[in-house]
Image 1: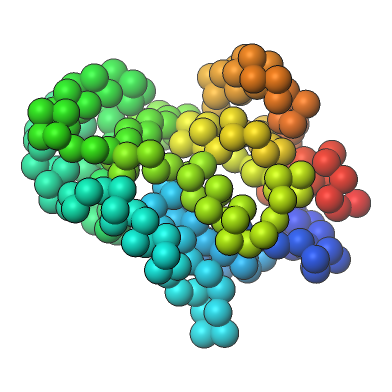
Image 2 (image 1 turned 90 degrees about the horizontal axis):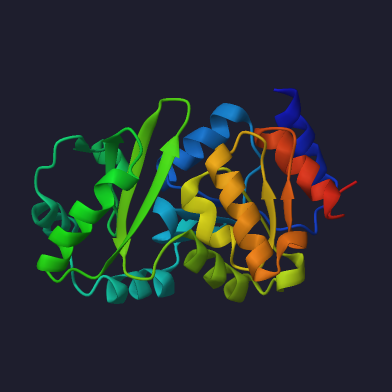
Length: 242
């Protein structure tokens, strides 16, 4: 696609830029997506909604063991099986496919918006004394909700903070682009942000209100274009590419 080719060219022309993909997908699915759409290869992957980090090596990508140990500690020894057992059966809440589960993430589909399920899920996890974080988002294309159960205090924003330290990129030069509800915390963490045009309208409104309240509105750019072209539009707005 032309917009992807333009983004690839922009990164090729600015070799000093570092690239990380932050995704809800597992590493293998993320790599498959890059190959399918011809996206530029990153220096880092943040996968499984922030619960796993992979760094580029000569042989490909390998797990960042320090981050993995941090996730294990945050989960408090809890396993995915423990989480699933505690939640049990809830009408309208269905486990996602096996390849979308991870060592420190349990993921569900919901009928309609996921917010309606949060109270019930949280109460069952509280009863099991589980220390977890619930991240809800909505896919406007499939009109299906997504609910991720993660270790307490962990989401995409915590992984981005880890990359901020590990990669040595200061806040003024860190840009986060996204379109989903599970990007919200990272988008409100104080970094420069690109909200691509295909983002959920509810998310756009929420980010606008919260960024004004936090005094960070000038750091959030709402792109007119969707997907890759929206990312490129935002990078140009912030002056990182021409």
